[in-house]
Length: 70
Length: 251
Image (cartoon, rainbow over all chains, first blue to last red; front, top):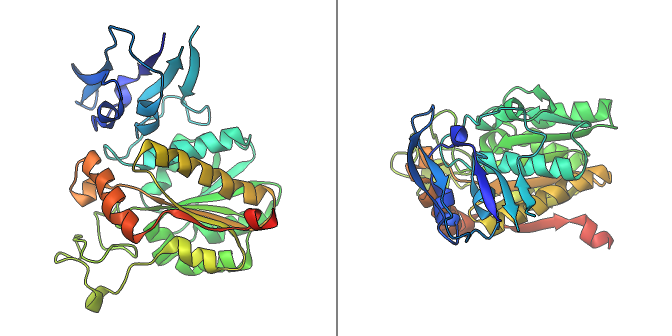
């Protein structure tokens, strides 16, 4: 099952990944990190994630640390 | 069974955290450098000559030997390191202010001498770390803290197109300009960085990559707007492309 792993502590809330995801599976969460940012979360109830890694390629802060495909 | 298609390169220090502003493309550029170093198996053998500016923090994040240079002299320092230790892989990671303003003499002459080093220059058309002053690459009409009415030709002159200038030097083996405004261009940027590193490994000469990067804080833009600015306005003046590649000529 394709999925991504997010390290919320590194997220600086630029939200570039949200725009990049072709399936719109990343959204802003209620949680805040040590920087006071509302971090992003991965929400894939219908297993739509393609594992394209576009979010991780775009993320300037390496907050998306792992991407799995298949 | 899911296969891993992306991971943080092992070259990064454990538990590092970037200190850049939100949406800054330095993070992507450093990751590309780390990925290329890993693909070429150079982590153990590489030495960074770090410059001044936002780019200097690269040695806080990568687990690679690094030396700090005075402002603009990273290329001069890299020359010394490479001549003393020709077996090492030496590269610089600089901003446009460092490479093309204060260090322009060092940069051009290293290219003319054909020093077997690689240089990566981040072009964000401003001096980022010191608060967004007018830099050598600031575009005509661009408002900065030291050109509040925009850059005009009569007073400030024209911006420098670094990749073209470096390509004109006979000692240059590879010179390219890439952009980080989209995922497709990020992948092209990685190929260019790899090429610039490979020409050093083959001993062909000076390898150079200019990377167009967004500076949302000093441009007073959102991260997304900054990428649109790079795509629509910066790329029109600083045209991405490969300006010199002697490996293609050899083939």
